[in-house]
Image 1: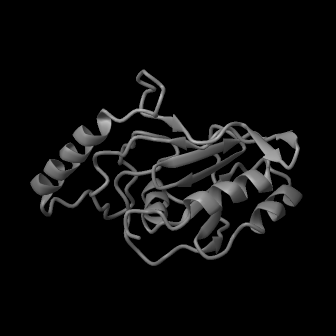
Image 2: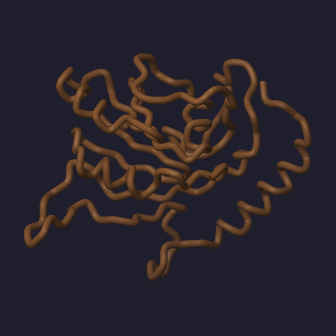
Length: 187
């Protein structure tokens, strides 16, 4: 169930934010990119050589206009504009930290991002060694969690940003963490 406290005010603010951001496209693109903007390429330079990354570019996603809504209860009926979500209705609660063993509900995922933390999720198909590698990224402002419903083996999310990876790429994921940690709306 979604709280209705100040619902009209929240919708008005969200509509205003959506109206302001809907005209924003990537600089120099000259067209509508569906609300997603890439901030890095899928290749990363390491000194004089270029190394292919197992991760795609960092993509900025449109702000979900319902981002001001707090979810109470399980929140299983909440809809999001992206999957996994990078903004939207969220669940307030005690901070989730480190490596968690169980999948997180989508409202809890967004609550993590709202604090400015980065959430790195992985499919259960990763080997124990790959999961241990991902666990080395956990720390202040970084949560690692399993998620069987991902579009790729590893997906890192931050407030309105996402990076999708076909394999564990610690350098690319650390780059995402360094760029996006501490940049949620509550910071």
